[in-house]
Length: 276
Image 1 (cartoon, rainbow, N blue to C red):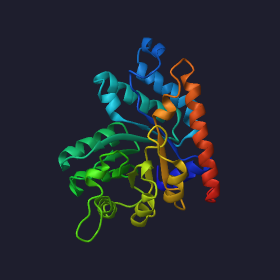
Image 2 (spheres, helix red, strand yellow):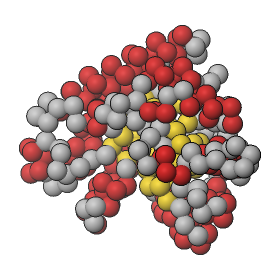
Image 3 (cartoon, helix red, strand yellow):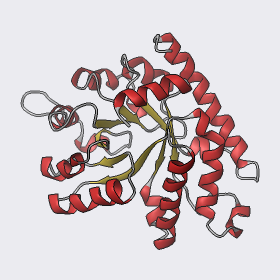
């Protein structure tokens, strides 16, 4: 899926919502534990309830890898289910990979050849040779960690060099030279607020994957105000606020209600920008 196709999906669905499938076996409704594959059963129900309201899904690999082989099987089944039943969905593997070149080649092969996933998140701090292997796959995206929403982002990302450039700005400036904005996105946390203005000064045309709306307290209004560009340029992720809205057997309906609230707000924001 290229940039224009992604934007067309956003306009058609009046939504730039990404639903995070951070599926924790300890948090899913108890009645699902009798299923042969509880994680997949939960994901399937969430997907069926929300697919018309969002443009992307983002399974976080940690939640699947923590369960060993069974977790990886559930992840693969989730990806396959999306591809077979909702082929217009943009699938992001939130894996945060980043290693020396030959290791990155294997990670890229896993996600882009074996699973044919649309995008994978990558940590850039080992430099160009750790990211380039992911960029060798035409039609697939690399999403580089740019400015994150966690408390520890203050430890390194805001350090300043002799020219006054902050580290996150250097990451954005340098990595965008490695690929076009039709293959490269950046993670920018929703809690960064007005700092989206600084991000957009460096990467005005790239899509941004924005976690942190909902349970983490990020403001969708602020993200849109400071981060939206002429092609929307945003995929705003909500995970816990949607998928764990309810823990009873009515969990899927509750998830839909929460997703719909966000989608309706997004529709208003897109209209205000003149994009729909």
